[in-house]
Amino acid sequence: MCLIPCLKGNFPIFSSVIPNCQFRSKTARLKTFTANQLDEIKDPSGLFYILPFQKGYLVNWDVQRQVWDYLFGKEMYQVDFVDTNIIITEPYFNFTSIQESMNEILFEEYQFQAVLRVNAGALSAHRYFRDNPSELCCIIVDSGYSFTHIVPYCRSKKKKEAIIRINVGGKLLTNHLKEIISYRQLHVMDETHVINQVKEDVCYVSQDFYKDMDIAKLKGEENTVMVDYVLPDFSTIKKGFCKPREEMVLSGKYKTGEQILRLTNERFAVPEILFHPSDIGIQEMGIPEAIVYSIQNLPEEMQPHFFKNIVLTGGNTLFPGFRDRVYSEVRCLTPTDYDVSVVLPENPITYSWEGGKLISENDDFEDMIVTREDYEEHGHNICEEKFDI
Image (cartoon, rainbow, N blue to C red; front, top):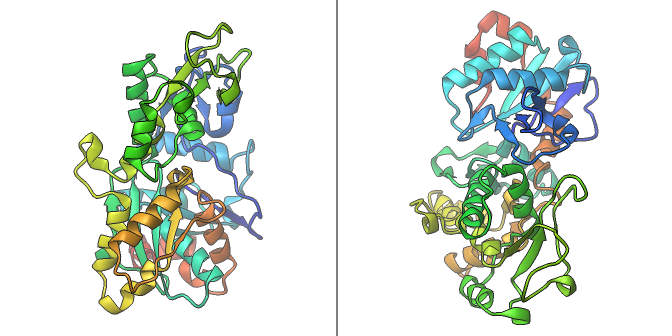
């Protein structure tokens, strides 16, 4: 998801989390819904997503333009481009062709007054250093939709030699959960929207995988992992929910007519992929191992400072138990004389937005941006010089 804080005179003091995509519903196939128009779809079952990003990179500019036209237009923020600066995030090591297209669209089509293109992790690091002024180093773990990045920052500069990307994100977890449920219970391969909600409502990170697996095999009351999830029908039940434990029918069938998913080991086996991607054949390190490997690529005298400033951001960090599991595994892999501290911000999804808000209020913000006049005079070269992507 692309994070776009806008500035017009004063920075807006609120953040809006809006889907960066378009949708088509099977009930209204001819109509395309954009961004938060998702709320207008009466029956989101079988929802078809049209995404501007693939594997974390912006590849469909037509869809992205339509999302931005909607956001910047009269229906949403009514942006006056000539007087507005924009901060926009990009993935690490973004392709030059995508960066140049971004410059052209922001400056030549929309004609923003000034632009700052930056990595989301840089904004998160800025936010962290503002809260912890005595710290010089931190390592940002950004686990989002397409992949997970682990990036060390020292004095607000990223250490490129130690950046690690793991090709596991929220999209892969949702797709894997769809496959498991479709194989075991009910065909849900077309129900991305619904199953994503199931994932967010019931999944958690296990602190002891094999112990939870044993519990998940038990019958009846002893199986404390098992939950029954009531699927929405979008007429009487608008949003799915977990049955209270006392209302669960442990043997036999429900007589209520509700459509029920019974979930046991799926609840923790799906988020486990973040810690062991090899479980589904992705030969990469899990997050704790990657954190330690990243820090070990840095000078030895700096390493203790990174171990005690591990910052978790992105939607996947909201799984219950995520922070504790990262801490316990990193602690096991770290020399005993080093302190380990893992920080989960109050809102890890908007943490980088908050960093962008703070940067926009900095005295040196004017030195960081590229103005439209600069771009018209120097072209892409000035952006390449100023923006450390």
